[in-house]
Image (tube, rainbow, N blue to C red; front, side, top):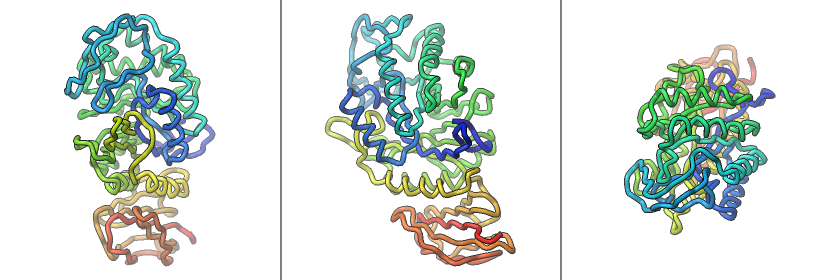
Length: 400
């Protein structure tokens, strides 16, 4: 995978790649049965990228121990939930961080290979703060050795992306100089130069630094995507825009309709968006962390959007000004325009199309997943709309 046309992605042979990602932080550490179920779900889903961690994760709804550990375990400690947001409860845990446990990384390789066989990119999170074992507080020498080891093991897989961290700015034991060093180590160690990013909690990392290939962002306001693009001139992937679900936390209880809305809004501003799902489960099997099956309603509608993107210009959708007022529009001038109404409900859109060119209109209901063909239009025109929210208008040039 490579960056293409400044703001987009393509495979090495030039085939466009439209990122439709999801998050399952530690699906790869849940045992054979649940991991197989996750892969079966992914095979029937629209998702072509999945974010997940190398290290185990300690967080609410994710307190179970993995079957394996990345380093030889010398002594086991507490597995209690502390209730804090970012934790380091070593409490008797002891690992030999100067040696690796090959079986752990062999299993990680098997998971990456299984995703590859499904045509899914593996966005591998190298560090994260949700830790009770001490993995988040290794010494700089141990961190660097670990990075070189992981890159040596996984770089040969063509579907690998590198994410330096999930919510890097919650890791108090790491400095900005550490993150810069981690990027450089991965960049210098990877002969195939896979994509590289870093995910924030509050503060953005400086994505303009040369070792960053694209922006991985956590924000709920997708209307800012075009701004982030213009500031850095690199692709924007909003990997976390909140999750469809019903858990108590505000980041994990938006509706399916809101999730679908954010996908369309980010797309219409020229970016890419990531999915996640957090519905309460009696065994704490939440998709966002452990995988399993999907329970929500957004995935089929995201699949509908993916099909539209695959039928759009190969160069990708970029923001276009002057076509419509007060609504986002993306596409390729003189070829394709996508206008998204969001929460607005216009019964008529004032559109400025190039004179002398004919455009076929399509009115799209993003929730009911319908496409209604319209008339041919040219120049400055008023185009009728349903007068309902969450609709889109697509205009395809048929006569230049």
